[in-house]
Image 1 (cartoon, rainbow, N blue to C red):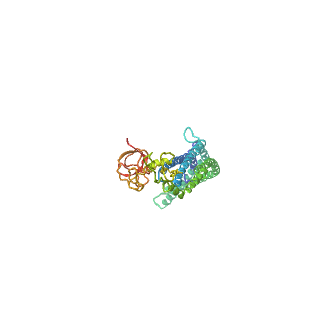
Image 2: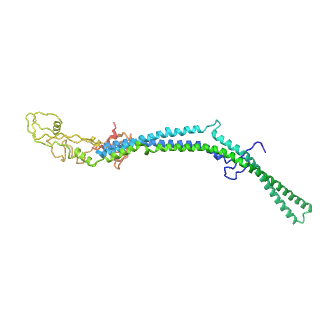
Length: 446
């Protein structure tokens, strides 16, 4: 036998069994796969952390935008507070998701990175030390048995060749007996060839059986040595599998907000805010502050005064009721009580202006065609044309209804009508589309 042996030459792998020569390489490859799987798990966690961050940012932006819209809209009272509670919930949940992102990257990601660095040691020539040790261990355990297997294969090949030659020699001898032209000397040579072939079959068969017996005797030691190296690889893989299980459980805890006390309290608070919405209370508030419950300076008889030869306007009467002392005025009837201040003011009411500057000389009918300032009745449609003005968008706006415009910050459009009481303007985009948009989202182009 040659002193140098290559287990990849001369032996055909007849099955997919681990015990076949070279099939241990799948176990060795598993070590390299373990390192790659660490990278895959880190990339998986990194992508999830990025999703958590983006989601948190979107929640914050959504809450800010809708909080402004609700506060500037017509909703009021307890229902307004309940609606705004959703934006508060989004802001708090956004903070929790940012904490999840931080836990994934600062704890889980770093934990895998450090474990990978400790478990796998790179070599100067490439690859990992653990992979080379497993490769050398299997090669050493398999080499003696593989050499005997190679001898068995050679002996089998020789035996099968001798059997083939014997069959061919017998066939030739049989055919020659039927040939009358063949002389006895030639026939004798064929018979001798058959005899030699039979002897070769016996010799090769004996050698084949002997080599096979030696291989069988070497198999138990071969299996024991291979099992020992394989068990070492199993122990290394077991550490990785247990570590992955530990890390995945940590990731699950970080992602599961249902077990976070503050997360539960967010939705308890949200539910309380929604349940606290009271339609009766809101209707009562609107009646007192925007409806028939509002105070009114009803017209009263005013005595003529020589010191002040004029009547008071309703605005001056309101100032008098607010604590301004007027002299030289004789007034009959009870003093009108001071209007009550609003116990609460909705965001929509802050943006409203109600006409109060009309005097006694004007019509007392609030539903007349013109008001005290010469303007039209607020219940009549405004038919006066407005001057078109070019404006520029300050922020992005996505239309929520079919009659609303959508534009990006920096876009220019034409304002067709002035701002109404609800803070909306009518405008036209450069593509000809006409619709409504929030007045505070644009500025005039100088």
